[in-house]
Amino acid sequence: MEQRKEFVVAAMRGEHSFTELCRRYGISRKNGYKWVNRYRIELTFPDGKMSFGDRSRRPHNSPTAIAAEVEAPIVELRKQRPHWGPKKLRVVLAKQNPDIALPSESTFAAVLKRNGLVRPRRKRTKSTPYTASLGHAQQPNAVWAIDYKTRAPTVDSPSRISVR
Image 1 (cartoon, rainbow, N blue to C red):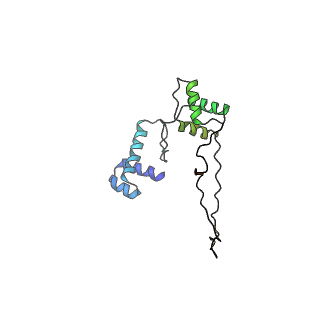
Image 2 (image 1 turned 60 degrees about the vertical axis):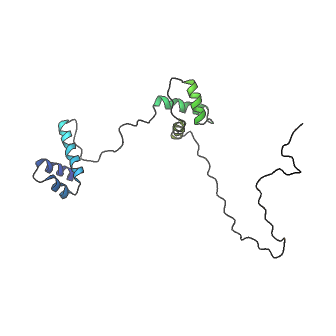
Image 3 (image 1 turned 120 degrees about the vertical axis):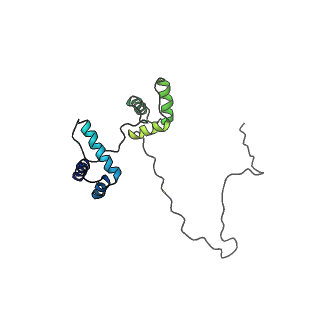
């Protein structure tokens, strides 16, 4: 931060070219202009102390964020009905509050997850593959194998069962 301050002071003095100053301090010209412009803005509006530290890159607003007055009924209804999913919650809330613009179902799901109202699904255990080698026939009909797909109707069994 001290180097940034020194750079700005040297740039304001104008003893060396801007490109030369940037080269000496090991920064790009773009960053150099950024620091000088920030310093000039702070001089124009002296509402506080000039900070040469890094600034947050977080946006000042989030246009897709939902309002608290929309999120609260979602959470409240889910607490009343813990087994309802986002789709059903959205339909019920739309009937209860027709004047509120409700977000999408995926946003409902995100709100439920953010408030800890969703249990994650159990992860399925993976079975180990069959590692034994296939049997080799020593004589005819010693090894049999069958692939079962589905129950297909045959001539003997009716394809439709009727109950009387």
